[in-house]
Each structure stands twice: as C-alpha cells, then as structure tokens.
Length: 259
Image (tube, rainbow, N blue to C red; front, side):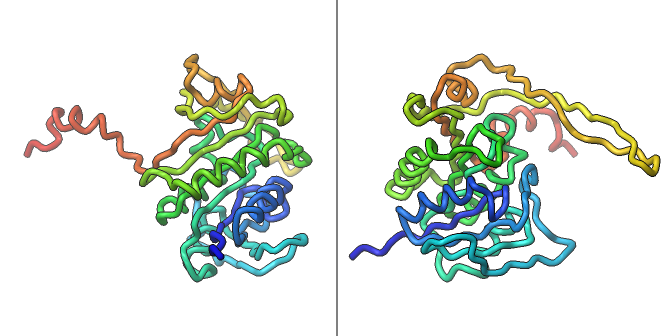
C-alpha cells in the first residue's frame, strides 16, 4: 500500500478561518495533513518574521477530522518555519496556503501573508501553492473552489514544480458551473493608489486608516486580472529569486566597477 503524502497546510486568516477549514477538507482527501496556522488574522503581513518577541505554538482541535493541528502566535512565515524545523519529522510533499478570503492577484502577491507562507516553503525546497478566493466575506462560500484546489494540488503532487517556483492561484467568486476553466498567466501590471483616512481619537491624537484604489494598468489578455475578470481560475508561477537578471548587463556598463 502506497504511503500517503505528507501535506503542510497554513494560511494568514487564522486557524479558525472558513477558508482554511475548506482547504483542510480537500487536503484530507489527498494525504496526511499537518496544519500550522496563526492564532489570529495576519493579512497583509507579507514575509514578516518574529524576531523581537517570543512565539507560542500549541496543539489544538478545531473540528473533527484526521488532521493534526497547531495554532501559533507567529506570522504565516513563522508557521512554516516552525513546521519545518520543530514540528514535522520529515519534509512534506507539498505546502498549501489559504484558502485566502480575498484576492492575491497581481501586485497583491507581495503584500500577502498567504503567498509569503507558500514562498517560505519554496525557499525550503518544498513544492508550494497559495490559494485565494475573490471574496472577502468571512462567510464566503468555498464550495466552488474545492474542485480546482484538489485538481491543482494533485497535479503538483504528481509532477512537482520547476526549481525556485511556487504557484499563486486565484479563484473568481462564481458558482462552480460558471467557472470556465484554468489559465496559466503572468502577473498583471497593477498598483494600489494609497489613500489615508486621517482621524482624531477622543484624546486628541491623530491616527490614520489605510485605504486605496486598485489600478490595473495592464490590458493584456494573458494576465491573472484578465483571467479572473473573464471567469477563469488564474495560476501565476512566482519565483522567489528577486534578481532583475535582465538589468545586470546595463548596470555593469555604468561604471560601478571603476576604481
């Protein structure tokens, strides 16, 4: 009898998030599941790690199931580090992060705790996928995501990923029968126009509440934003080598190396 693959599950919305529970349900169909997730929401944490305070990590039971779960006071990246270095007794076959409540397409990938957890797993040499649903509602319906989460995860379990690459998967807020399929895409060129709502607290001290508008400057039909707007699940291969290789030759011509 073949041994089941060991699957590490994490997220950034917290251990009780419905999106995480949906992801656990799917992963229980594919392998032996270990969950290490934050004890509270950590959205927008990016690749932050805890260096100036202690981290707690405790076994916990949220609902029935064969999975083993741990709740951590750390960030999503901390959770992956704890899993790899302290909790697991062998390297997992895959790490899946999510299912995030809200989009992590385009430029959002660099702010995302969901994707940073996947990237950290990739740094450790573990095939990894971050999953997100384009619905910010805590009570979002994840039923339509499960078919695609299972299919994409199984493909990676069966075939692996290119070295240094993790997958950023976003799923449109549609019923399963309305989703047209899957597109492998590039990241759209887009940005946030930040806006700060400046307020004053009852003690007269000013504070700010960050908001903003998402601006998609990319009209290409090969992008994640196009795919999602047109009813497709988007897959963007993400590399964690941030070197701008194409710029090295140009920079070497500028005289930096002259004495």
